[in-house]
Length: 158
Image 1 (cartoon, rainbow, N blue to C red):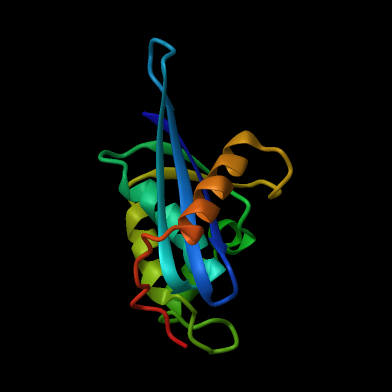
Image 2: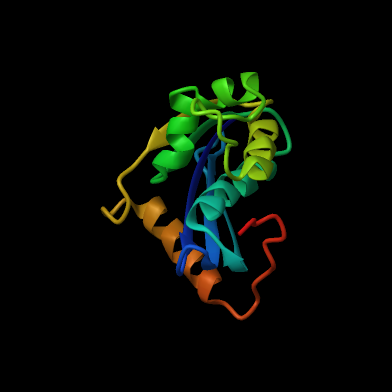
């Protein structure tokens, strides 16, 4: 099963109110297009945490192993996989090359687990450049950041 996942994160301040937006797209064998959208907002979070949450929500929505093309404008997320920072972080007990702890390790661990059963291609797209699904994710993320129904990001460390 081939699935496309698009995601974006947003924060009004860093930290500040934030949100994520995620779009899953699947074309069935008969050519029918299926779209699912997800979003959520947080009272006080960071842009990077929301970029990670957008990805996590997309992968956690899949209920069987899939071939996934994951597209985001987040170099933070895309480069972590494409440049194998993840492998180095895991090998070094979630420490970076400078021996400092990886930030947002709670979400990185969750994303690694969520991607484990899938065959994933990570693709970067320039943000705010007219890519339809990236623009939709941005709209979902900013609406969630501005919503009155935001959650607490309990793992955010000051």
